[in-house]
Image (cartoon, rainbow over all chains, first blue to last red; front, side):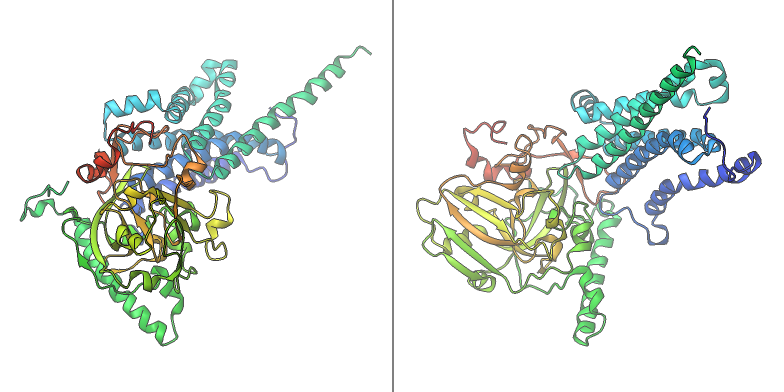
Length: 219
Length: 321
């Protein structure tokens, strides 16, 4: 997969399966847990004056964050010489899908209350909602084909299909940028990170082609 | 608009949140009294600032201009605020405004009026009775609250300054104090915040200069010590911490209109038929309705149509949004 040598800190397969993955699963669920604590007022937690907005924003923010984290796995693998972290990517991607889906369902059920005429109008006529909805739709095939069985069945096409995440991340940032009222600093930070992660992939392709071409040079 | 939806004695219509709000309200008072006493004793001054140093006001309820809807809790009204001078998040104003000093306060009156100059806030308010009015506040972000404001009719205050016949508009300005208002150190909007009204809008009996809420002076996060309330317009017209009132012949610039002219107009009247370019204004979320309280239809002029529609007769409200 990568030319990088695994460094000395590579955990064993057993450690990944028994400890790292379960720990990651719990950590990734913390945003959901914080909402549940707030919703039930456990330990003095609260969702504030506008609980629906709070839930929707939290899900949306973490959906975007997990998309970016998932996109960062490959570069991080190469930068830190840690091929094993690729084994965590599926869980991160599925969490991204989960939070994005919850963000959408919160809007559909708690915010709009199944008010279908308004919902369809919004999806059709409000560009930022159209964009967000498109990103969600594009995530569905990725979630569906995330199993080992589907990976085997799709073979090489699996990788091409899952490159959809590049477009999804850009759509998600655009969706965020467009709904901000005055200060676009935060969406622009996300944009910079996504462009950095995508740009690095492009940059990585170049020298490799050049060296491959050189290697093919007749001696 | 003043029709009570629940019948008297219909206890099922009283949501638990309303009952809590009262106890929270009373609890706060106790806390504040304790905090004030602690402050006098020279201890615990730090946590006094949490709700700001508010004091009781003598108010007289104006029933004619009050909704019968139950008001939102003091907690909700003072922790869910749009006041970008203190930050962009709704919780920022209550968290970041403790260093703001709303007293002493003066207001500079300028422009097309006979009685211009700089006036102490107490002197401006002295001739007037402070009224309590329960208004609905409809934010341009499609949520609403019911708030028991304390204030004086804007018209009564403006008349003190004797505007001339050239005074066609009134412009307002918020204080500029980046050292006390951390949001003003960011370029999110053009500071200081400015707003304006046509003179007939400003003279409308519904327009209120608020100095308090829930029978107490305004907390910093709600625009202490003096703010505008025009309940038939979106909340952002209600400029806070006012230091300047200027009578002008021409329509004055307004901050959100400068920031995004195609999204926020000078008039900013609540209108369910004219959507914000990015979201619908047809329905609103009532703050305090809880997790499963769905949106309710937004009313023309926020329910104040009878009172204010005549101000805009013959105007294309799609054009003058």
